[in-house]
Structure formats: C-alpha cells, structure tokens
Image (cartoon, rainbow, N blue to C red; front, top):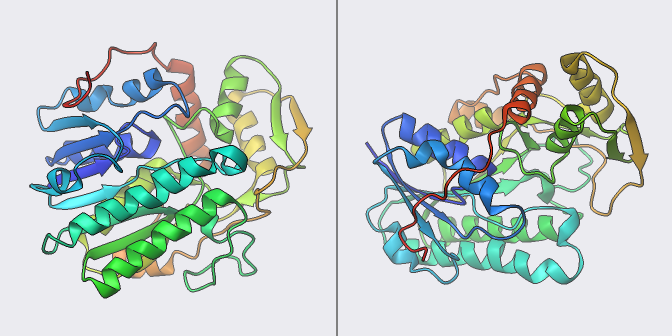
Length: 326
C-alpha cells in the first residue's frame, strides 16, 4: 500500500482523488491552502468523507512557503492538483496569483523531488494549453497556443514538469484534463451554475451562442486516469490527454440537462468571454495505449449525478482538522 501526497486535496478533483485512494487502501497526506476563489465551507465539505479515515492527514498552507522536502518524505507518489483555477479571472490584476500557485508551487515540488530517488510526480495540466487547436480531436504533439493567462501558466508548469523529467531524472508525467465536471464542481463552472439554476428555477446564462463544443470529462474518469498515471511507468516528461470520449456542443449539453430535469430550460445568452475557445476535443489514443485509460461515463449519467448532488447538497460541515491550521 502506497502513501500519496495530494496537493489541492480539498478541491473538486483533488477531493475525489483523495477519496478513491483511501478507498483503495492507500494512505493520503493532503495539502490545501484554502484560497478564496470560493467558500472555504464548500472545500471543507469536500473532505467530509476523507476526514473519517485514519489514513488521511491534512496540512493547510501555501506550497510555495511549506517545506516541500518534509511533505514528500515518506510518500511514494505526488499527485499535484493544486493551482489557481479559472480562465476568465486570470486576466488583469489577479495574474500574480496564477504565477505563484501554478508555476512557483510546481517548481518548489519538482526541485525537492530531485533529492529523492524514483518518487512519481503526476502533474494535473489542462486542455487550456491548446487554445483553439486546428486539429480536432487534438493529439499531444500539436503545438500548444493558450488563449488565456491561466493557460499560459498551466503550460509553463507543464514544461517544468517535462524539463525536470528529461534533464534531472525526476519521475514525472503530466495529464491534460479536458472540461472536468461532476459532483463537487466549483461554483463558477458552467455545469454547476446550470444545475443550481435548475434547482432554483432560475434562468441559465451562457456565454456565446451555445455552439461552442467541449470534450466534457466526468470526474470519476479523471480520477481513474490520474491513479493509473501514478502507478504506470512512462517515458520521462510524458504528456497525456484525458478526455471524455467526444466533443459535445453546449447547446446539446443543455438539451441533455433539460431531459434529465424533465422540463424546458430558460436559457439566456451573453457575450463570449475573453479566453473562451471555440472547440476542444481530446485524442486519447496515447492514454489508452500507455495508461489503459478509457472514459466510461456518458454525459447523460454524469450530468444526472451532478444534478442529484446539487439537489441533495448538505449544509456546510464542521472543519476538518489540519496538522498546521491554528
């Protein structure tokens, strides 16, 4: 049984990964800085299941400031999911937060890993590094061209991951996640907003005309791919697309949600936002061949699970005890 370090453990994907590792019998040291991009109570609730496990410990703090050697020591694999999220909010005065949490934090972990022999480092990158790719579905060897400051910082950290793998023999791999959704999704993300509007019987606002398409990927499939990457030998600095199995327009996704809700939706349109790409699509043949990854959750089932979670979402739970929080 391995001991894993999961950064961003209280986040949307990180908390699902933490739960899956614990369920499989592994020990988990979680790290989260509980930044203010959404309510701390939501993030605490994400860890409710993990908090019941004796094999789970939580450290609260900023990865740039914490002792990376101490965090990594005793762990067999590092799943680095922590970061500053959001395409639209990465423009303007908040950019320094993106360089701090996405680039500097990644470099601190990689630099510390140089002193450890063979520990696996799995970096959670993003399809945002591609921008408006000319080839769909997009293979990993397409030249990235991000359209947002967020995408630029994710790509910079991804390059660091490859660099430390190829030049300093750190055992690294990067995963480019495509449009992840499901229970615990961040409140600023589209499907979470749509589901809350349905439950609250409010209009749904979308940016653009709805013809834009995404390769929506259910969080359970993302977790399965991430765990596989943590235990599978790959070439140094390897990068993999992790997608849901096909692109779907936003309008089609809304039609699916309407069918699940059992009623028409009141959809309102707003202007396209800076950094929003027209279409994304993942060529996952490399992940299938080398990681054994295949997405298994349909959009219908995944959206139904998220809508059910929004409907049944509990009130904020008591804080999870941290090893470093006051």
